Image 1 (cartoon, rainbow, N blue to C red):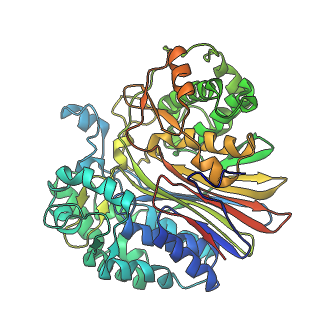
Image 2 (spheres, rainbow, N blue to C red):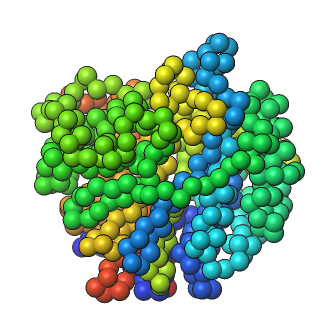
Length: 528
């Protein structure tokens, strides 16, 4: 039980339906759809479309999407809505032209957006309400304007300098060359018009015709290779989730090209190391989690890619045998300096989760990767184009080397857990590279330390920056920080919050949903 005389909030409980998102207006969209008889899938899509308007730096129709859908009988379905590199993308060309990496704010980082095909596939299989209904709130907010919330304003102003360098971004994402301020009304009528077209005509209106031509022309004018044919070829794939056992639950993730496998490797290592048995705010618990994470992320950076190019299968990577082979790299008494990790660009993402009265739970994530993606915005249709291609490498022969029509290693990951064969927890923690660490830490808070969903999300986090230094949130006790320094970790206060998460726990005994939403964002959980 939390201290009610200290800052914090209680988890949200409901019986008929529940949603947790990073923005109040998106949560409202989800609940409205549920009340109208829509499914959790409908509500997740409606929330995501709203977020594409009110958190344009984080997500949008120019980005990618993954989802896990759990049915009441325990069946869980994975959906990979990540787009691919252009058919004309070739690593040899980039190396010959002096590239050592894919620049994150460039047309070369733009991969085909997969989100809308994923929304369409999710709706066709699990939706109840008309597709057009799911766009109603988002269209109104884009055309009439919405209030800029504190975290959105905090993020937006940091991108002004680079947004000014793009014609479409200047036109649609700034006001007289400046970011909107907190509590301002901001509208993007061109995006509203685009959403109206998609709502009326379906996803094909985005991938073919005028909108697709505008996307291809915008990218090609800046030297990129994406074509109308690349967009017309986009498809979302239903995939079999991967899993491991942890804390009495079966924890599921989407298989590669996503990095969900990293969270499962971490959980296996945590089981072997016994970190789950340590006090939640102990130096040793954080040390073992960080070291397990560094080992697991090294596996990611060497092996995770489009699955057709990987040298080990997901089943091999998530096995306890493989975890045993890795565990020797972890020293309980010191940081292992031999583990080195390359840096990825920072990213921005929205994660949300919804559950309905029929027993369906949806774990859903959508992203344009970097803040405002590539920071290239189509001049007429106001589509923020993602920069997911920046996750590719140009190292010759690497599994994640950029190639024609290839999916990049992907950071965004939804998660789900089953207990005794039934859906028990739908959760996710956004935040780019941090996400597998966030999944392991937050789920351990719940499964190992008895925290309710809100407490599990609130709990202090840490993660290494591009220079390897641990960024430690203010919520982590000072004794832990100094203790980690004694173990050889370089530490510093985190300049910004680490990630943002949502969680729904399904209590089958009481029939209640119990949800938490991250205070690091503007959103909340709600139910009825």
